[in-house]
Amino acid sequence: MALIVQKFGGTSVGTTERIQNVARRVAKWRAAGHDVVVVPSAMAGETNRLLALAREIQPQPDPREMDVVASTGEQVTIGLLAMALLERGVLAKSYTGWQVKVLSDSAFTRARIVSIDEERIRERGAELYDRCFYPVGTARQLAAILAHGSRKEALARVSAPALVIHGDADQLIPVQALFHCAQSLAALGIPAQWHISSGVGHGIDQEGLRQGGEFLANCFAAGK
Image (cartoon, rainbow, N blue to C red):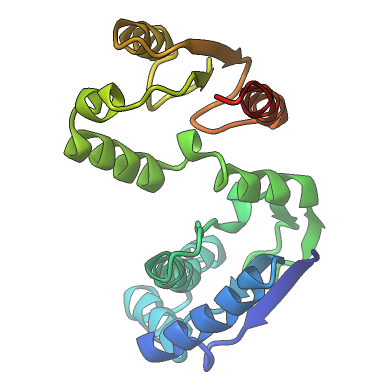
């Protein structure tokens, strides 16, 4: 698996249809297992439109404010592209330069990049896979939980032992729910064990996977 950085110019993202095409290309790289960072330009003609607006207000625009105005073009594109990827089921999030720590010099309207914090970029990308830090995912998960309703009737038909694993940093479902779940299983006559994963959000870590694998192996060995 590689980290791929893709740059798309204004013509490539000039319309919503072309942004959809870019999203399809990015989705293919993700499906192949690669991490992808996409750097799109403003939509074709948008920067010129913004510069013209600035000159209507101030014939000789202040360089700093000119940069503020011009940068909004790229912000529109990154937001639209992230939406297009999310619509395809690809985890994506837009970031501006300062959010991923791309630093430039202070020469407004002609600044040069001084440094790029690769570690920060990778950290931002990793957040997409931790559901407790992903608001869209959290909202969808919570909606699914509320829509599903009580599972007690379904659990009453289960007789196999259960292992309940919960992260103590879960922001979606408090870790206290683990004990409620274990008690509910016990009340239904279902043997239940539990494990709390330290520092883990609404997901599972390697230790949790190890615990689950060991639990299943023991159940199969006992013929349960």
